[in-house]
Amino acid sequence: MNGKYFKDKIMIITGASSGIGLASSRLFASFGAKLVLAARSEDKLENLAKELAPMTEVLCVKTDVTSEADCRALVEKTVARFGGIDILVNNAGISMRAMFRDLELSVLKRLMDVNFWGTVYCTKYALPWLLRSKGSVVGVISIAGFAGLPGRTGYSSSKYAIRGFLDTLRIEHLYDGLHVMIFAPGFTASNVRNAALTADGSEQGSTPRDEGKMMTAEKVAEYLAKGLARRKREMVLTPLGRATVFVHKFWPWLTDRIEFSYMSKEPDSPFHK
Image (cartoon, rainbow, N blue to C red):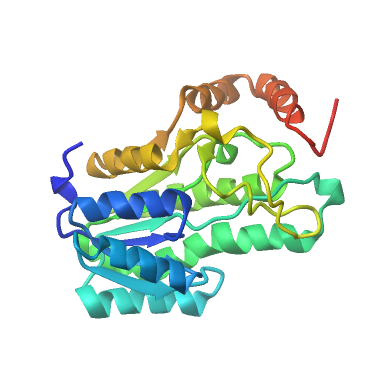
């Protein structure tokens, strides 16, 4: 795609050190966007910044999105360096894999703190600057934010919550020029499943799915760029994802059964027929 739209745009990308965030950082740097990279791993951010420096200006801000103070500092450092914000990509997130009956509630809280509250905190402090620039705020969710995903109660709950939050924000600023986009990839090849939390909060460590058959993070980043440039309201990726959202809208009982059958076939599935 033609990346001229992003030339000199000031972009914050959370969760920039891996997966979709990493691929997006590389793509938008190639378009000449001024990037602010946020993640907990300062070393990974600094290495990425060195890689991208020949293409654009880069600011790294070590950020734990569960911390309201960190999110406020992220925005303040962005504005101090670049003078404003044009695009906020709320991408930081974690997953989980366990039946709710077996789940320690601290795991669900952790999912909400990272996925939902991280989006809320960053958006809250970036919003005045996004309104000033008539810019874009993106929430990277999942098909699990449209239809409940069994074995991922905390993950689905957090993604539904992000969708509800951003849909409402869009309506509140319907005539203010603010662009709000819900961005829902399907299964994406990344480390998110390796780091997914189990019932006791420990990391899963390996993925139960065939990553080779999934959309790459680089392809997801390309779709993200297209959605931003076209100021799309919502993007649902993959034929399976779009079919799931469509069927769930009219025949939710059918998606309940299909999802149960589909997810129960995972290796070491936490539930079975």
